[in-house]
Length: 459
Image 1 (cartoon, rainbow, N blue to C red):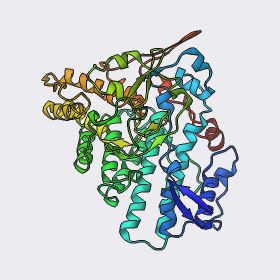
Image 2: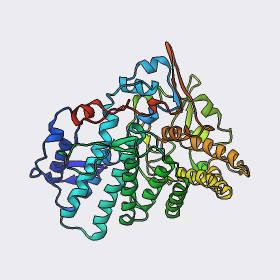
Image 3: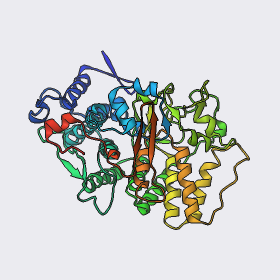
Image 4: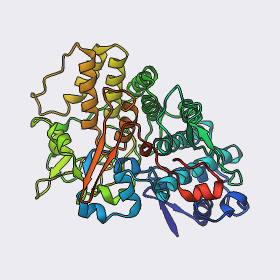
């Protein structure tokens, strides 16, 4: 009998048993055993480096459990009332920024991936076989993935990072051990980000510069994730430094002139811009038949800007749907990984914020020339730093739609009066508004976790 982990067949009963037991151990439910009973380690414990590599190859869990709630709540699209009413409760409440604690999947699934990583990290010192390079790779990947999921959770269930209050603001429940007898407690925002940064920095010397396969991490991916995290913290010095480090390892961009603009799926999985591949399962709200791209966003693309037709398609009724997913599949599955276009934009933004307009312009123009029809792009040459920053932020939104990045951008930019934004949803029977820094920028954690673990609920 075979099981398939990321399209690779693994033969034999032992790995099947390990995966089955891992799944049974990490599933969140209302049973108090989850927190109070230690697992029977005699059932199936990874004992070889091959076992641990097999766990890392469980693509649907290691790479595919990122939450999608932030994109459902963001402002790059809108729903008509009939489509809104057809959604399941959590997605309707995400979309309208209402208070509802039973968001099971978006809270539970990342912790399942984190538990896999903790099992790898706890068992790695005990396993037999494998040389140092091989073991380092396993450890580095587990650290990277754990950090990435903790960070993703922090964007939903903790306040935006504010240096003056991060030491007291509630963060997420950090899971740094596979021992399920240890009850989770909520850390502070400062400790949450500190743990994420520590895991990522520890992973770097253990990883190759570039991975042979893009569903595994690398130095470039870890540098890129550090740039993303530091940007969310508004630490523009470190965000810029790590974006540079990532791009020094890998900096390919896709010339959109080489793509088939009319293709239903313009990008393949693991395309040239992807450094690390991961995704969130497609929520119903973001399906092409329901999610209509914000009209002002779509109108912001010039006719010679290839992104207008590569990333979007016009529906028969004149509305616009998103199709430019870097996952390489149709539908609402969201690319959440690290890609070079994000890094060029981080480099551009941080450079101008740090007073280096020349570097900012070089990074921005290097990206945009690959997005416009050949011979039509006129490079920006702006000396006013505030004006240039505004352009970079607009281009960031235009190049990275539906990538689970917009929500974090809204949160961090709301702290700057010049870029704070009021969000509005218009539906038959009511208008919903989300003010800058409003309470609903932090979702309530799953009520089961509150009931079982005694975690403090968000307001």
